[in-house]
Figure (cartoon, rainbow, N blue to C red):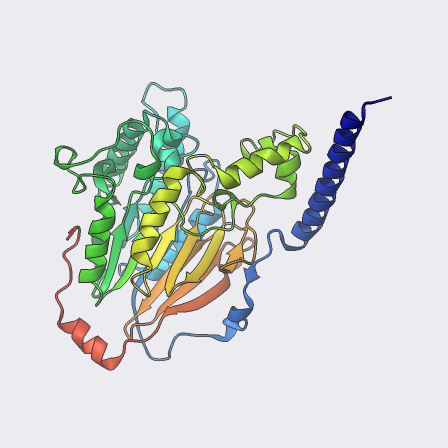
Length: 423
């Protein structure tokens, strides 16, 4: 006969196990209904019928695509083919922004490294697709490009930046030399791109800082002060801010997990690691949600960076912030700002619908921003369709309205910020 205390523990453990199993079964059934299905919030119902104002010409187009690091190298890649079609249509008055994680799994190793050939092949595949493009190309770096945040990641970053410059001299790799930024690129009249190196704040080991490294920032807070100044000085412009890490996310790095990941938690590290760890396995998602790895929003480094960045962005309405990192497509409108996650360039992963999100989809694809002469800015969500079929547009939304007449006149009289200027 077991002592009463042990018997109580046994009953308690059994009850917790049954409750957890019931909850996971409920979650699993829910997920089967919405997995890989586009989610559109009720407020966005009828998006298919909404169109740009007639008669206004396109001024500039921007493709935002992240996490291309696992593109197909043994045949045609559907995302690169979709991007090439977009580039042919967009022409010279357009920009492709590559949002980081350009080479999986650990960026570009040294020439003698056994994984160097495979890494070069993946990067070359992207560069070859971009080579005929007549528009502007901007590369950002992500945590995988910094050797997954390890202490020698700065060497990996510099190596990749140099390789991109050598193979595609017209491309810009920003911020240069691994600096935190911000740096600016004038894309068109009254349209400004601001780039931040968000990996800088969560990176281990050496990080460039100060004039000795050709960085404008002298401490970890200075980039946010510079960003605030830039946004203040350029309120007459439409502004896109780009970084690798999202500020809102309904996916893995935002602390969202599938029922399967509670039972097989090691699949978050390797997709084939089906080692069942029921009950105990739920501690891993809980840890990632509450404490987090350095690439998760919950981690103290990421949390501090995100808090400081949002404190600035929330002061300026209609700024568009674009990121990758999570392998899906997400759009959030919050406090008059627009927040994109476009990390589905070569992989897909679970994303939960609802919450603050206006749109989510677990599918390969990317976002396009179309800026019109009348001031309208439209978000388009492009995904590859079946062979020989046109690209699918699964969601679109007007992010920025037409210029008020007075504001348009005032904007036309202001001098644009020179390309590459940080002030």
